[in-house]
Image (cartoon, rainbow, N blue to C red; front, top):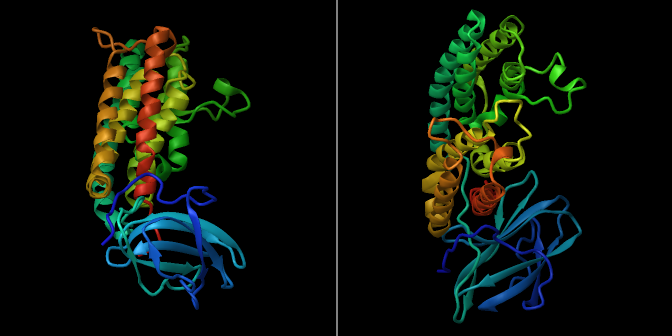
Length: 376
């Protein structure tokens, strides 16, 4: 049986001077794998030719485990594309999945010789993600209730005219929201109402459609009165409660979990560590810390799936999560306040960006590793 080694990218599609061109293999419901002959171990380039009448996915796999060693998505009818794979001793087959049709698996071929296979991933299905998704939905449900309590308190602060308390409670509520990073795509329009930025609005911060946490932040740190901010705080609280009521009925695509494991901190690099999402509070590093916590929650619910496919990669991710956490924590002062990102020493800011950049490289394997493929 071929060795199964999970990595970030499971196939290189394109010419490779070190690999030898081998066989032209047909892809279709009627002729899946036609042309697949005996092979020795080593790196090979297969010319995959779609002889069918619809686009197709094609996978080179070990039929005994469904471990995928190479894939091409969306191979159009009448086209040929190369697929490069390194094969160790073991059994292999082609699986063709024409659009709108069932999967077809070719005859099995045995590869002989010495050496091990590279770049294999055991595919997952929607069912594999059901348990993690249920765990995450439960987490979001519990923390939306907590968030609603925070925005209720924030509303009371503003309504009573206590803007000093409102600033402190704004941060508590905003960080609680940002720990729910993986659900943002599911929150849909609610996210724009609750945590939207002024980017793209005609009148920017003064635009009537600028609402939510950042609108309140702008007013609190730019001297607006409690009377002016009361409607903003009231609307924020109403929207959070509206989201909490709507959440149980919202659909959550299982494929979103692996994607968010990378995207939450990708957005952190783009908006928080640049200061673009700072509307006066100077707390974007604190938000980065909340985003880190949200990423850990996502990773923990999918951890068994990642561990089974790439334990070494998971260990590296954990190590860089910890390293980034320490760099972020260094921006928190003894009194509990956070140094604004633009006030950090250049070396500290460079370290923050560099550490997150490396962490993102490590996390980039997760969406590929847990991609729902048609191979099964």
